[in-house]
Image (spheres, rainbow, N blue to C red):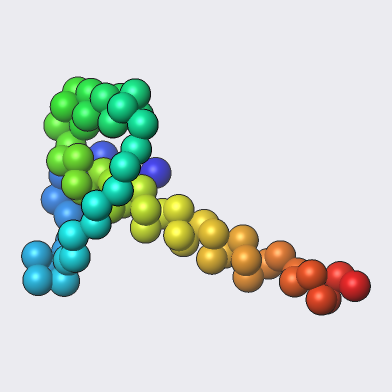
Amino acid sequence: MQGLESMKNPPYDEEDLVQLATRIPRRVARELKEFCVRNDVRLQSFVRTALAEKLSRMRRGAAVRPTSRARA
């Protein structure tokens, strides 16, 4: 993950954001909140950064992984 400093000052404009509602296990929510409090990181910024990084990794992986048709 990016450094914690980048999560403290997110580069997004509030008007560019949409609200996302999701359900996660209580244990994960508790760990997430504890991590953010201990590291002085906004929970919203942490989740936004984590999602962006995961999508980026998945895109890179899909770009180098051959499709099932190419393997056949």
